[in-house]
Amino acid sequence: MMKYSLNTNKGIWHVSFYVVNSQGKRKQKQLSTGIKAFDTKGRQVNKRKADERAQEIVTRYDGIIDNEFSNWTLDKCAEYCLELNKTKLSPTTYTDYLSALKCHIKPYFQNKKPIKDLKPKDIEAFCSYKLDEGKSPKTVHKLLSLIGPAFRYAEKNDFIIKNPMNVVDKPTKLRSETSYYNAEQLNTLAKAAKGSYIETPIVLAMILGLRRSEIIGITWDNVDFENKMLHIRQSVVVGDSSILPKDTFKVIGNTQGKKKRELILKYFLKTASSERSFHMNDALYRYMKNLKSKQEVMLRETEAYRDFVCVNDVGMLITPDVITAQFRKLLDRNGLPHIKFHALRHSCISLLANNTAFSMKQIQDYAGHGDFLTTFNVYSHADNSAKKTEMDYITSCFDNLFDDNNNS
Image (cartoon, rainbow, N blue to C red; front, side, top):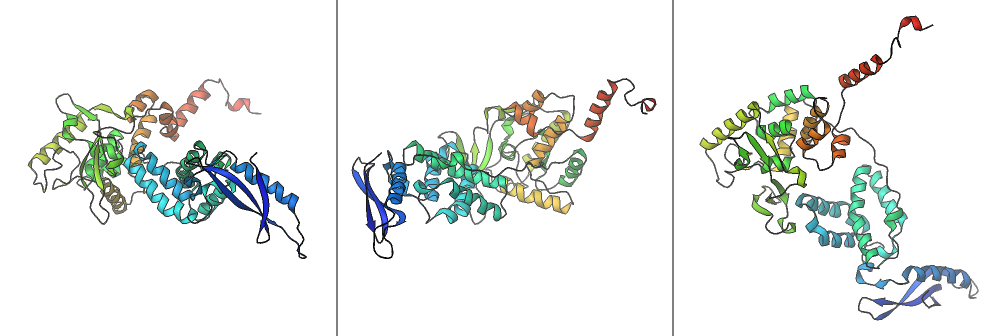
């Protein structure tokens, strides 16, 4: 243990010791033990108790490099680590994390304890505060995933001895049923979408189970009419292109509105398995042919998006935010249950999963999942008719099990 000494300051026992800063120089620290040093008559008291507390404090600092980072509050540390690791994130995730920092992490942790003094109970108090605000356990877990790198960085660089996140009691995630449409609802939606602003994105989401970014990223050179193939090779996202590796993207425009953000064409997808190809059946082939013919003769305000499949009537790219907003309005106008646009992908894959003609491996390839368990756990929803078929088979294996003559 490091050497230390006890002294009094303003009637409180303090412990003094030396630490080494990041330049290798010794630096004295004097910290309060919080224990009274004198009684009402001015006599010195509680020295043994103060010494025990001093040992706890010194042990916590033993071996730690006194770096500026360790004196930062958690919000500042989290922001630093986010910038440090931003090239490992997608532009969308990076933007979401920045928003979470501004709205949740910074208001709670700024001007409070430095990261070196935070304990598990402080993080648990933050979790409870967010739950009391009405945030879901899932949201709280996402916030913890944002502050976790700050503690890992501090532990790795010896700014703290123990990572409090290792023993934090995190809120239990509630298992919720993912909303999706059945075949009947999809048919209703298909009719409602006919001629709408986002007809094409809806059609491609329902038939191919594509992600929103994949749909917007389809260009006409990805559609091979000769061989009836449609290739998914790139995506369009909104965010900050500076975090992406060089030569892996192209900025193709900006979103409209108060906050203009970049429209980024990424030459890679979410995972390697996301890059896939579909053999177009006659129905999809005809749809894409007709769409191509219409776009070739329409009047365009710009030629910037001539290569893209998902454009509006004047040739402007249909952006992610527009799809989300227009989809919500379409559901309202037609009295359909509210689901996220991404749930159309879930609906498509669920229809396949409920059909015993397709193996989970086939469905995994169709969905573009890298992990078989993702397909199995998330996208397999057995409907009641399937359960009845299974029950019919099981009961058929037992002779006269439910024969009335055997019930006495």
